[in-house]
Image 1 (spheres, rainbow, N blue to C red):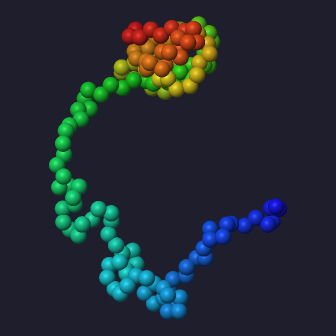
Image 2: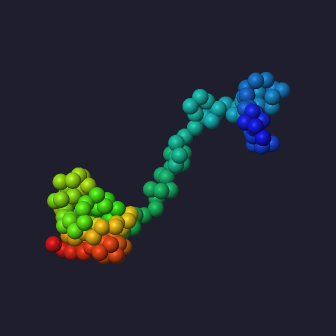
Image 3: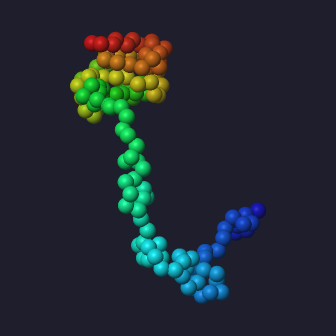
Length: 149
């Protein structure tokens, strides 16, 4: 088999249909749009969800429940894999991560360590929150996680 002999499988490609090119083509005259009306016009049709002027079904369904965003907590998050840049036995705090630009913005509820990535060095991590997988990975590498300081 040579590169110049390669071609698509039988039936994988079809010829482009040229609409509006005479009645012999099967899609001539009105070009498959029927006679007159909104759908036959240029730019015709209605936006998705429009129900002919009726109140849309989505607005008829009652809203249930309430999410009070006043109680949402925002943390500066960092993955375990991002801590690999530090030397062994370094004490990791939110201030240090901000200084090294690992964390872009300091959030009001502090630092949260997430478990994505791998770590090989023992580190002392001080955070307000950490996932189980993050704690396991840090302790497996010989490090320590101090939560709530």
